[in-house]
Length: 187
Figure 1 (cartoon, rainbow, N blue to C red):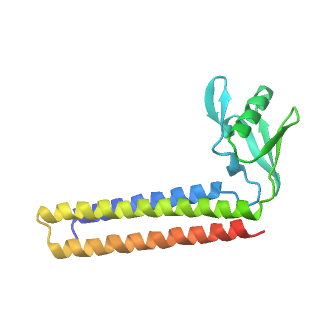
Figure 2: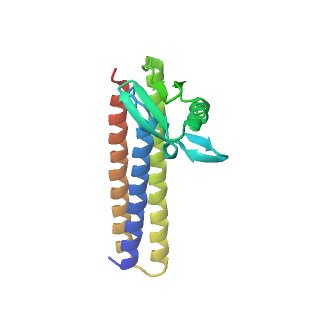
Figure 3: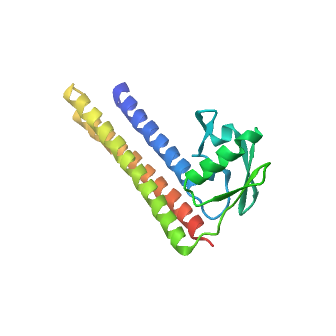
């Protein structure tokens, strides 16, 4: 196998690993009924005129399985944090007690659980699309190598390896989705 083919295979694998990591990160954000600081990761707060991630202006912790506690490092940030949480439209109702913000995470209804499963499925499907795109890109690079004189049998075996790689990552995506689905639907 030539260095060029190995480079293409390594690039495809790296792209697919990044895609899987991204899927894992996105699935963590889909809440499954338990309170988790990652639920607030996407929130940005207006910090003296600059949009700043919540975790850079406050600590976010779980008090118990159903509640989060947001403790700002500056008391003046209580109201902007509270507004940012409300504006994020996560279905959470922050309660400001003058020192910290408590957020009770409501129990999921059956309908909400189904919506979250749909969201998880769409994340997994988006990841599979990116995997297939990486496969297509790798195959196009291999075709270019074939035109520049690389033997056809080497290209064919490399295409088979790319397909095997893609299939393996699609199975991993499905497994991640299956675990998340089970987690969401468990009452």
